[in-house]
Length: 110
Length: 414
Image (cartoon, rainbow over all chains, first blue to last red; front, side, top):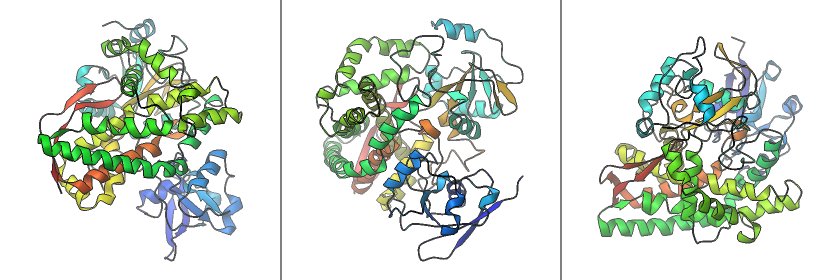
């Protein structure tokens, strides 16, 4: 069993939530499994619903794999404002290099 | 019962070493009427099992079903997502450009349909879908009051999706019942060439003609979802020859599925009055209730894949060119993944269920489906204090769909 990877979710105007997930799992999968309601992931991680929207902290933006076309299209559908640092958390796979990742949650997912 | 040459040959194949054999017929009347005990048998037998009657591999467990559906390069769709292997026999109808395709062909087609049915586009039709739901539900309540009870399949589940989605596609109002017959046939065609399919196929020629006529641009309202496919052809994303087949995808998959999603959700609520009471107390739970019903009584029960290479999975190797049957509905009740899976709980949050599939072939219409489900269940929740069965529900058997024929309910007004 590989070492768990830590990441932090910061809800709007709320306290930071520290989570740990397994290598290879997505941020969305991990957050939903642990009952975080600020990430919905309605489509189960198929980049189809835009309800797992997160804002990536500046320090981490270029450490993530680049945006593919499907994610790019879905980010046009988010209920909260799209920003340059917007990503779908179902497309963020946890790796050792992302240990300590910081993400902000939007006001709404739907 | 006759079988096609390739499935007869396959059925004569010896069971592979190390793979548990489960001798069920997933397309028999008995199985289709009540599959759950056999789902459990298959899950308990192993992660991958062999079904000797058709000579196929199968999985009924969540982890393996999810892994298979997400490995689209190993478990391909272009050889067909039904029992028939398109490398060995002719498809029932010209191949779908999206369902029965692999990347890169699939990617182009998918990208066009995904944009048309995206959350953003669906937001634009929300008000219209909501208004239609309200009008229809008022009518349903009047009928329930006048008659004492109402068949929510005939008067609701088969009416709403036939109105709102074909309207959005831009289809004319006449003849829409053809879509139900066509969908029934297409979903039967994923199974063996058994009596269910043969009966449906008797109707095939006039139906196919009607469907293909209505896929032509001239028959589709400007600016509708169907017309948007032709706009994508104008932009060079797909060819004009491909456009009608993509419209056909909307007409095949966009109606019979939601009819059953809605019908099955109403059945679940009628059978679980304490869950309905929670929904009535808080109609904002409608979308969540629909989602749980999709997990609990999945409208689409199964899909096949074909291995493109020798595929290692769960300690065995599935040889290249094998058909693999994934039981979406069985995965949705796998106790290895779901706590208390046989409990219908509208506040469960069943994220990651397999009712819409998963990965690049995950249902491209799922945002529309959820909208329809949310609006109907929400509208019912506000109008009805208690819903109860007014007679035994009857089933409409289909090789792939879990469908009701009739569901007579008493709807006590709020």
